Length: 356
Image (cartoon, rainbow, N blue to C red):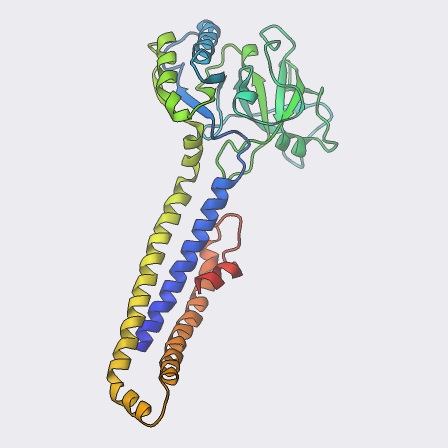
């Protein structure tokens, strides 16, 4: 019976370690700075291409959408983006940058997005240097782009890109880099921000955007229906896929980690409960069988405290044996969980100590 209890302790220890690791990993992911404001922004997702808008209709549509949503009480600003963060979408292209040839054997490649004026402020993205895209960056003006810090780190040894010329090569338009913004974890909390170039949407009126963002002063959830109505008032034929707080969209990128953490916590709690009940049952049974022996010990002068120490010593021996086996099982199992754990070692000593 004691061997069985020790085995239960060992297995419950492994489950508790796994639960602690996954819960800590999930909390680190959620707390990680995503580079944008997840608490005060509502995003509406739609597809202007499926709504059969012609390219020449898009500039007026975009202007009306932003104006309509901006007039909602409690909305501080509104803007548009083609790709946006936490959508699961991506766009990439090769480019030419003044002063840079290649990186090793690779060409120059960047992710890209098309954003309207006010995008950076609406999403709460930090401006690192230069200026934002604004109303002056319209069709016919000097083409401009923003780049993120990851772009600067990868493609500029001197960290100075402002004013440099950027193009897709050949006879393509040459863009001036006018600003550098903070990295945005566009592909999820776990993924590092890729080098990204942000084009002015007004200078690319033919681009089909899919995301509208509204920065709100109130609870984002309370603005959802107002945003949906404002879009429908402007474009009834535009099928709105969803209107959700940007924080909810971001949390979907860690849905797998959340599920694993919850399952691990449930199994860890069940394992600990089984081990505790088993330990109690085994010790209670042992004490019941030794009632006569305990009586003789007391009759011969043993103190109740010494009897308690005897029972506790046997109990602790069973627990320690189970913990030793549990640690022996958990250490090699950490290699299997390494790809699932974020921001910590799967063999974290503090976690093992607390679990024990």
